[in-house]
Structure formats: C-alpha cells, structure tokens
Amino acid sequence: MIYLISDLHGYPFERFTELLQRAGFSDDDLLYVLGDVVDRGEDGVRYLLWLKKQKNIELLLGNHELMMRKCDFLFSPDAPELMGNLDREQKIRLGLWMSNGAKPTLSGLFGISQEEREELFRYLNALPTYREVTVGGRRYLLTHSGLRDFEPQKALEEYSAEDFVWNRTQLDARYFDDITTVFGHSPTFFYGDRYKGDIIVTDTWVDIDVGAGYGIPPVLLRLDDMARFVASSD
Image (cartoon, rainbow, N blue to C red; front, side, top):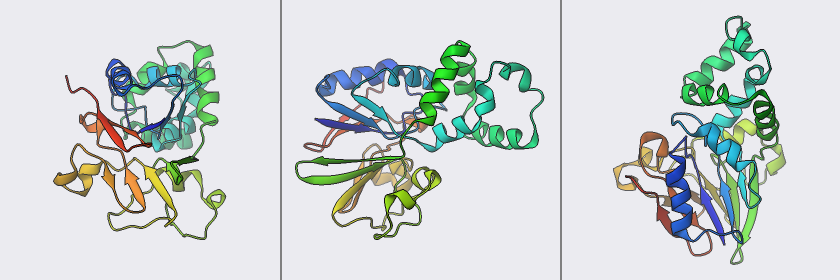
C-alpha cells in the first residue's frame, strides 16, 4: 500500500504516529510525505531526525525545507556566534525563513548536537523534488506544490526546485491528462469553506494539505483505494 501526507508543520509527533497505526501502516507499505514537516509547530526537527532513519518513508522537498537548507550557515559549528554577525544575504535568507514560522524549528536545531545538525543538512540537501508512482495501473506525480508555469510537454527535469515547492494551484487548473498530480502546500480551505478539513480531488490533481499548520488535523491518504484517515484533534 502507498500512503501520502503533507504539510505536517511540526504537528504533534505522537498524534502522527497514532494516525499511522490507526491506518494500518506497516513495514510492507510506503509513505511519501510531500514536504513541509518543519516550522510553525514544535516537532519539526523531531520529524526530520526520525524520517531520515526510515526505510519505507520518504520526505519530498517542501518550500520550508528549502528555506531551511538555504540557511546553511546555521548548520556550521560556529552558528550561535554567527547569528549576531550575518552578512546581507544571510539576513535575507534567515528573514524569509523566520517570517514563515521558523522560530520553533530554529530552537530545535540549536537543541541538538553539531553532529546531528550536520547529518540533517546532508539529509535536507538530498531530498527529492518529486516522485512518480503507479498504483492500480494509474500513474501519479507526487510533488510539494504542483508545478509552477506548467506546460504538458515540458520535461520534469526542466522545472526548478522552486517550481516544485512554491506554486499555488488554482482550482480550475489542469495538469497532465494521463497522470494524476498529488501535492500539498495550499491548504484546501483556501479554496473555500466547503473544502475545510478534507482533501480536494479533481480529474487531474489532488490536494492533500488540509491545514495542519493552521491547527486542522492532517489527513493521511491511501492511494490504493483513496481511503482517508484523519488525525486526532485531542
């Protein structure tokens, strides 16, 4: 079985693992996390430390992981001293990340050892921007945000990392006719109250970000039968 979830944004880690258990997720299954496990919530770094050890769970690059790894200076041994003496470019990168909810992630980053920080940086640098899977004869393209400046004939290799993580898919947008594109990044309630708390399924794309970063329990999607499992709100 293949499961998908996106935009956990530091959602309480224990509730996430409980969700996997309730869904019956096992070592024989695969889980793709479509980016943005960090920022806003407290458990972002905890997710990263855990995810990099998992053999059947893969994290795709999200815009928040991209902002984090662009602050590469924070992973150096002298990062605490550097914080008071950043150059202009470093201030811009850190300012963008901080304005998007980085404070709890930054706190978690400075709460682990230098060796763990260096391992996390290598892990972040290796995150893929997309994956292609086939389930039940149907092809799926998994990304964080869909595809910016989408063109049907454009090869996936021609898109930049930013194209995969910073796009905002419009409700009337269409992607490939023969591949279902699955993404997060845009909380479904952005499209209207009738979508609040649920995923959106169209004939060419699926949005699975229901807004965990805004306090809405995330939804785990099982691609094999499109079953949805909602995390606890307690």
